[in-house]
Amino acid sequence: MRFDLTPYRRSTIGFDRLFDMIEANARSASENYPPFNLERVADDRYRITLAVAGFGRDEIEIVAQQNLLMVTGKKDDKADNGNFLHLGIANRSFERRFELADFVFVEDARLNDGLLVIDLVREVPEAMKPKSIAIKTGAPLAAVESKSGDEAKAA
Image 1: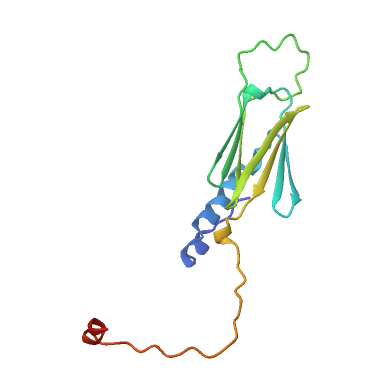
Image 2 (image 1 turned 120 degrees about the horizontal axis):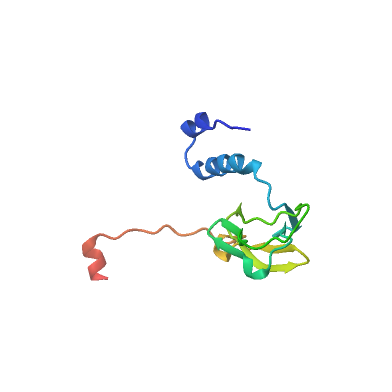
């Protein structure tokens, strides 16, 4: 499916990254190897599980950049595949990209029984978290009078 976001790009400001993500996702929608699951474990925790049967730990690379998680599997295409009558288990190189929201970081990655499990956590910095402001009661504030330059020097 192809989305034409041109009318929205002309009438909005600051949503370029969102539109780029939608278009990139539409382009890569046909790519489905390796299969994966996305799971919300808790309010601020997520899990990606990729089926990477046949890949060893040394053949998989996980790179986390700002707002991007890239999982790459490299298989040696020249390896002797034996004398198979049917080769149904996909064993080709791959690259999967996941766009991450702000403040989402990789916490852990494990490879077990052909499944690569990547745990993500969203950690909002304290400076960015909402703060409750206490409302004080008491006497009204006194007006502050400004002094002219000569009065300020004399004081």
